[in-house]
Amino acid sequence: MKKRLFKIFLWVVSIVIFLVLTGIVVNKYGMNKCRGVQITIHAPKDGAFLTQEDVKSYISESGDSLAGSDLSRINVEKLESIINKKPYVLSSKVYMSLSGILKIDITERTPIARVQPDLRMEKIKNYGSYYITSDGRMIPVEDGKVARVVFVNGKIRNLYSEFIKLDVDSARMAEDTTGFMTTMYTIYHVADFISKNNFLKAQIQQIFVEENGDLIFIPEVGDHIIIFGDGNDMANKFRRIELFYEKAAFIKGWDKYDTINVKYNNQIICS
Image (cartoon, rainbow, N blue to C red; front, side, top):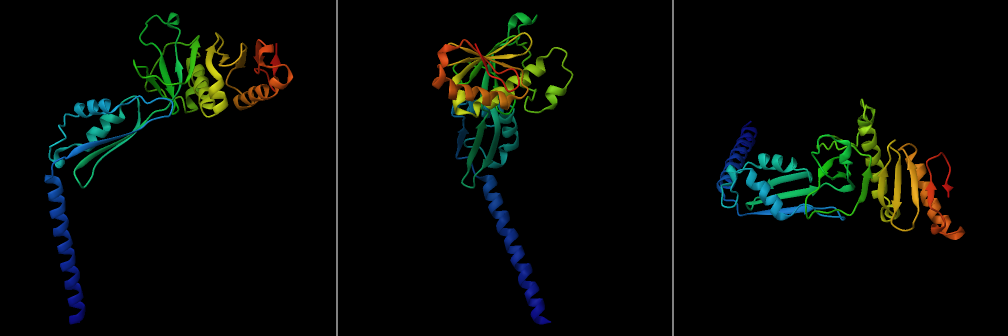
């Protein structure tokens, strides 16, 4: 009985000591000063948009002076929320190290297409060109920040919105009296396919959108154009384009044709 009570006593003492030590560490940590800020930016290979100075400007928006401040007074959640709302930021993680360093890890969005709307189609000219990213968002173009991606122009309405998500199928199924969402949904998925294929990414430099929503590709090499059509049967169409480039050079060469048409099912029409 005494042995059991002694064991219980030891457990109670151990727990008390642990809580006291934890309280001391937490209190000491909370009273420590922020010794500095460490910013890490994970940027896409084809172009980094964010700089250290950009992130520092985000920090100033939080109202915290950070360096030299008590760690307990720095609102990490607020700072992370501010950063995550920036259009170029896909995600961020803000946290304090035990050594008193504020660490900010940011992953940038990856642009896959630059869209130039036809401003003549709009009564209100509120936006110029913008990027579409791999996660289906639209982000603005800023001076000095350029991504090497496919350029898209033609009959595209200027309805830029940071809240539209083109990576969800419901976007295409929504009520679409203007055809805008259907066109943007198609552009996103076509550009995403191109961005994931090294050959297509190097070869297709421009996409032109026709009045009916069909797409025409302008290649980097050669004087021909590629009539792609709409976004249906997309993978099969791209396979036929690759097949053309694989075989045409051994038959007549790319420069023998002005137009390559893969719009129709299981056909490659060259003229």
